[in-house]
Amino acid sequence: MAGDRPRQLRLTGDEDPVWRLWRALPEFWRGPVIGPGIQGWENITENIDYKLNLTGLPELIQAEMAWMAHWQATDGTRASVLALSQLANVLRRAIRDDHLFPPSIRQMDWETASALQTWFYTTRWGRFPSKGVRARLRVVFGFARTALIAACHDGYWWELDYWHPRCDPRIPLSEREPMAHYGCSPTLITHRWLREAVKWCLGTMLEAGTLRWTTVSQERLRCLHRFDRWLQVAFDNPLDVLGDPAAAAGQAAAFRRWDADPANRSDHTKQRRIVAKVAARQLNDDVRAVGELFEFMAANSGEARRVLGSLAEPWVRVTATHAASWFRQVSRIPHERLLDDEHYVDDQALGQITAALPLLGLSKDRQMPIIRSDGETVTATGMNDPQAMRMILLQILTARRSSEIRLCDFDCLSAPLIAPSRPPRARRSPVPATPKAKSTSHPTPSSSTPKSWRSSKNSSAGSANGSPMSGRRSCSSSCWATGPASSPTHRGPTTGGCASSAIWCGSPTARDASSNSAIPTGSGTPS
Image (tube, rainbow, N blue to C red; front, side, top):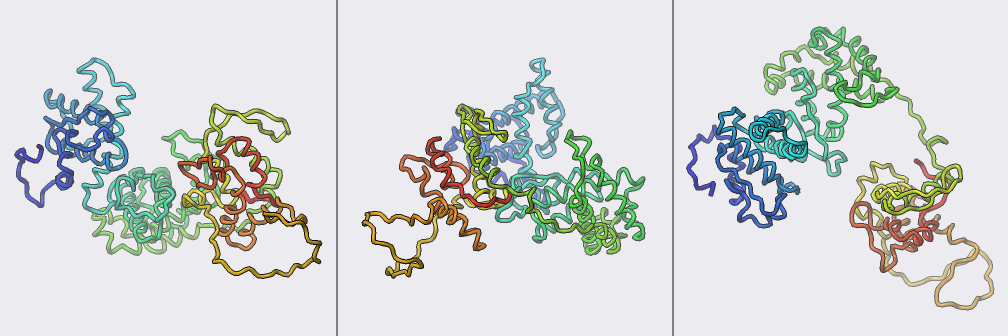
């Protein structure tokens, strides 16, 4: 076994962190041959009978590749055994031919690995590797290598050049983080003195709970990246932005004018559609991000030298006056009422939406007739997206935003709570008594109250009294009871959404029959 072979002794203080990770691996995952003895190997690897052979590689690289394969298995994805085996073959050939390569996977980025792969294919087979072969190896240098770098890092997580919660569990996340599966890279900021300060500021604010991961990764880092690009075009010496406090107001105004140009906001290295107009709220976000950075550095100037070292020297000149000058460029946006004729769905539009809603969940091999806005009936092919269908349906029933629907619990439409049983009591009727009708086995509703009106009345009861949760429960009890979900042969959805929204997954006949009772009718639904 790998643990039995002699190994060079190292001082504890100088030991590479990867050996700590290697010792924590299960015995059969330590190599040099990984596969035999691992329970469920056929469910872990890409190929059932393929083993990962790391024999002949440097011991440090063996430990790193073994840990990466184990991390992929525990992460929930299949271990990239084929890609790791090919990388091992490339490195063994490089050792035989004295071809130089980095001594560690952590020091080998994707460009270096791709160049090694190209050299291997051209020297052995006289051709370049195909796109599929490159893509297979690219997976190894994605999440697995990022997780390895994060696991071997003993400092603060924000000191790294790439942040991803999936690869680094030290990144604090809220209970329901919408963008927890997204990463970001502070290396987009080219000025090192600015990049290290941004990493320290955003990391501290995230750990303190001032900001959330979604705000940091999807907003603040992008705002400060635009500030970094502005420094390149606005100054011969970008450090002048940290100079005279009296010039800070003019610099902030100049940045806002530059930022208001849609062509300046888009990164020219990426092909993206340029918007026609930049909203005032977007400009405020960029200016506010810079102001908060200046405010943070001015308030922590004493600690900056300990954290940033020599890179803290340019920030010594930053004062609270700089931050105040930038904050003054944040314009006041008057409150506008969004609920108007333009942002409101009337009864006609709601009917068209609900009539075509089953088309989203219909499979692509089926068709259904729909009525277009001009009144013409056409046959449309299903889109095979039941998750989008359920989300839109929940928006109609609950009048919630799409971001709120995405964060709903799985069983969000639960049945109403059953009140404790009480002895029946007589209720005084407000109308004169009518002649006693012939008794039946089931109670019948009053003829003066249409059933459809009572259904919509019950479904909107929660919205009327201001309780969204009670409105959802009323929808559950009054709307879903008559749909195909109550059929003993109906099967609910297996992924996403909620079990109650399975009313749209039944047969077209049942769907049409239940559409009137399932969709509440009213004066309109906010968009």
